[in-house]
Length: 134
Image 1: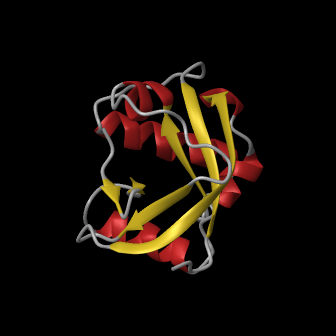
Image 2: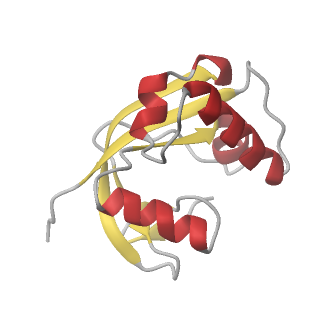
């Protein structure tokens, strides 16, 4: 189950440490506007439903403190082999091509103990930093 902050589901980007700090900063500056998760690993195994358009998520920094609220603007579940170049660009991490995106993500998920193939279901979430609301 995902953590909660201020009643919102938590979004943690990457693994703790440098990767998490870098991805959080890319999001806060607006360069990163999307993230990918594996349906089986990040949702089914965690017993979490998919994000929904309009949902707000708590983006947390490396210490677990809330850094921002994000608003989900689109959610699609697609086979790994069908993730688009447009989505890879929205992730804002400097991928050179969709093939490069696939290579980096295969390696990342393998390091987490999960092998992906072209049919593995990927949850593609587009978001924006939400305006502050009290």
